[in-house]
Length: 177
Image (cartoon, rainbow, N blue to C red):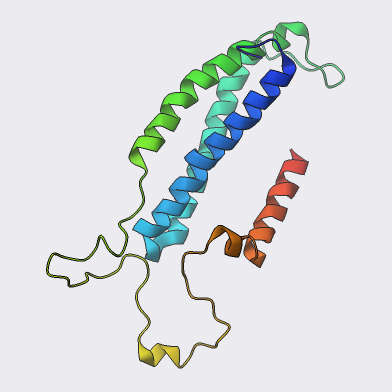
């Protein structure tokens, strides 16, 4: 298990670490790139998501190398002790690899400047990074139900269909793994 022999403590630590790494190392960069590159939000999100996928391919190879270097097959779905005894070592190595990566993410990822920060000293507003303002001509073509791209509060966010669709997709993905 790594640094503890108590399974309950290990489970709590693993769940907390998984949540922190997932939140700070995945969702925060996605959110902040939307502010920096509003016209390329899909591209930047795809790049980050693809990088996370590539990371799992790399860490899968590290896990196999550390836990099962002799490529021992499982017997009735259970690996022999020569493999399971390597799991604590794997957890320590992954901890030492991911901690600097997480710290690097925390240092390098910061939000885009707010609209107040974009104002010049003369009080003139520079072009917004969020999204271009819609002029009067284009508003004629938009219906009242069109949701404009804007920052939602947490309360507003959890009331959207998109949020619950993502929760459902995540639940399906977890149930298959």
